[in-house]
Amino acid sequence: MHFPYFQFPWLGDPLIIAIDAVLHVYISHGVAIGVLSLIVLAEWLGTRGGGEHWERLARSAIKPAVIVITGVGAVTGVGIWFITSALVPVGIGSMLRVFFWPWFIEWVVFFAEVAVILIYYFTWDSWTGAAKKWHVRLGVLYIFLAFASAFLITGILGFMLTSDGWPRDRGFWGAFFNPTFLPQLFWRLAIGLVMGCLFLMAYVLFARWPAPDFRRRATRLLGKALALPLIAMPVFGLWWIEMVPMGFRTHARPALLIWTFSYSTPWFYIVHALCGLLVLAVLVAAVRGSIVGSRIVVVPAILMVLFFVAEYERVREFIRGPYLMPGYMYANTLLLAEHDLYSRQGLAARSWWYARQAAQPTEEQEGQFLFAANCGTCHTIGGKNDIRDRLRGRTERGVYVLIGRTEQMIPWMPPFTGSERERASLARFIHRLTADRYRLSGEYRYPASGKEGVP
Image (cartoon, rainbow, N blue to C red; front, side, top):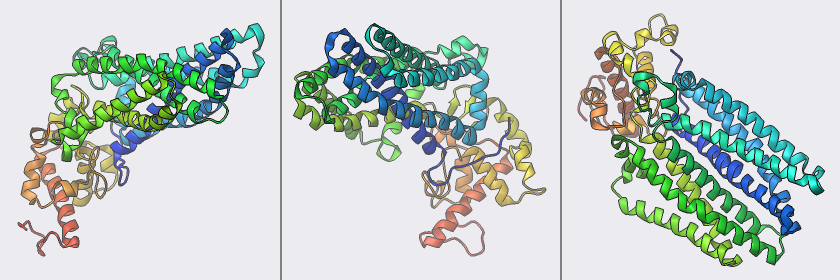
């Protein structure tokens, strides 16, 4: 498949995808699974003689939850499809061919989720007396659908890191039930319940209406509910790490600390210890019934857990470099099987979209195309991870050598795909970018003749 390349300005492709995807994870895990499960539990407690306060808690919390799920959650979910289709169309197209039916079923499940939660919310007051138990069962049906959606998506996400034998046998079942499927599924359910407990606890602690006695009872219950998924998280997290191939595992530290801070490991332990202590402090304060103590630590704990979830998503995406799908497709969406062909015959000449832009493309146009095809998935020109900063001060010959040795220098970078002539063309394009930038800033002296020189 050949598609035109589009690069998101300044932020770059990876960051704009990550912002939308991580926000969607917060909602799909923390609210759609975690908060809704607890709302159904609160309603059930109300029907079992727990008092009208549990019913009121469930009734008051359901409205913001439905707005967030059907509004922001649905928009960010569709946004993932829209953004990835624009930025990595070959990657999303290939994933659709492999997992057409799981994704089709997931969309059916998603529509069912929306329908059930809207019926659950808008008919709340219609279920009274003995019929109330059927309303609770409707809530349980929604939870089942949310879990089914997580089940279907996790198989696809796990495949992108541990494709196992799929590049060789192209078998569906081995691809879907890949080595990281189960640990990642259980980890996601656990983190969803942790976020749900913290979100609802913050609502109980800061809402005006709960009486002091009920506020304390509800906080204690949520503290106890927090304990099990909090214990399960590190267990399933360690299981997941053990299933990740060792070659990918070695990328974890640069993914967590960014390349600049990859050797500042004390900060890694300090931040994660602080995260664990904050959540543990919430659990202890809640179980003890300390309203003041819980109020002090619950918001920082929520922020730390949100940070931890974003960190996990970054690691999961980053460590599989240089691949989008190991053994099949590089991170820049060029296929491994086509690499030798393009190295012999050239990449630009075989791109229909590139050939359309001009009958005789200029050297600048060719450089832009080769940059977009090989580098644009991770690097920008003038934005985050600016290629001009990465290759600052290099000669054209130096850039040429580096382009041909990317995977040897940095293991999560894919190799250059293209002919030797195109490699030289890309080196010339990037060198001019860096030289022009620092010539204008006064930091780099570019020879007036335009020929290669050493600053």
